[in-house]
Structure formats: C-alpha cells, structure tokens
Length: 111
Length: 118
Image 1 (cartoon, one colour):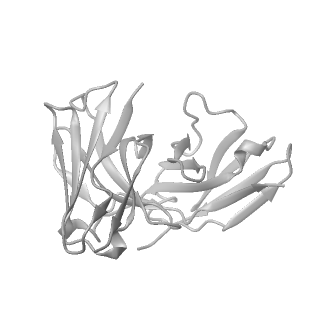
Image 2: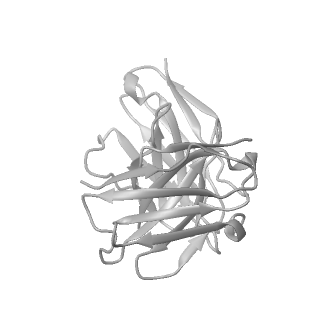
Image 3: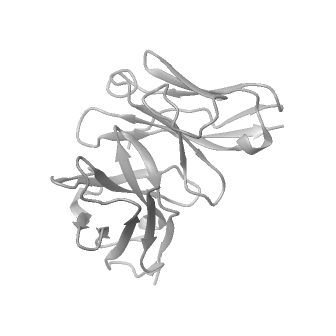
C-alpha cells in the first residue's frame, strides 16, 4: 500500500522549532487541501492537531502550524516543549477508492 | 463532547471473525451528514484506514481489506460495528473507532488491542 513519505525522526531543543515534511503525489497531497496532522504519545490514541492543511482544532496551541507547497505538506512546531515529544503522522485524501493515505510517521525528540 | 469507546474480545483465533463495537456518547450517530469509521495500528507500525460508513449511505472500505470487512450501524443503540473475517496474524493491531469529518479524524476512541493467536 502506498504511503506519504515522512522523515523517520526530527529533533530540537526546548524553545526551538522543528518542521516535519509529508511528501505525496499529484493524486493526494498535491490534489487536495485535505491534509491533516496527528500527534500520538506512546500507548495513546492519536490526536488531531491540524486539518485542511492549515487549520487548528479548538484547544490546539498556536505553536502548531501547517502549510503546503505542491506535493509536500509540512507541520511546524514552534517553541518546542517537553510534552511535544511524540510521534506525528499526516493523512491526505487520495484519488480513487481508498479515500485516505497515511504518512510513514515521524518521531519528534525534544533534546 | 463526543466520546467513542471500543469494546470486544482482545484475542481471536486464526481463521475466525474479529468483531468490535464502538459506543458513541455525547452525540447521535444519526446526526445529519455524519460518518463513522475504523482505523487500526499494528504494533510498531503506522496506522491503516479500514473503512467508514455514512449514517445514510453505503460503506467505503480499504481496497486491500474490502473482501473481509463489514462496517455497520445500530442507531437504536448509538453504536457502530466492525467485523473482519478470516483473520490471520497480520490483523493483530490496536483498533480505533473514529469520526471522520471533512477528510480528517476529529474524534478517536481510546483503542483496543486485538491479538490473533491460537
């Protein structure tokens, strides 16, 4: 099954910023503004952080922001805090029957 | 505040059927334009979309699972269900019930680990 490509890991010190990429194709990320980002702590359910590329659900800090250029979407976490250490993955709408395609996931380490 | 809770057996034998139920509270599954779905995450792996169902329409399934999966609604109990038939070890995963909205997953259950083993 195809997947959106994310870097396996990203790191930053407290107070710094980290940006995670999510690269797809013209059938998914490039075709729709329906990219969402999720944070997952070990043993916990994923939590929606960004939807429709740039929008934040109520309660998500504005330190989290999303963007897109061509076939690549990005999540930026500014002013890193210890609790931001988690796995992050992206999801995009995709052409064809499967509706969704998932990213490979990125582990964010706060040094 | 919507709350989703999965329930079902944590152990299923190979070749048998995995059956899970998601109980929804804080909202009606019959609400206009709502979708309800399932996602699973094998241990140490990324999540995988299983499928979803519209409260007034046909279900949509992951093409790789379509022949073995059924998602259904029980509006009288405000629940929806998942059945995965002829399971093997590769179906071992944490199963989450979810509420899709505008191609994102706003709400997740806490997840339930289902192990396929004899």
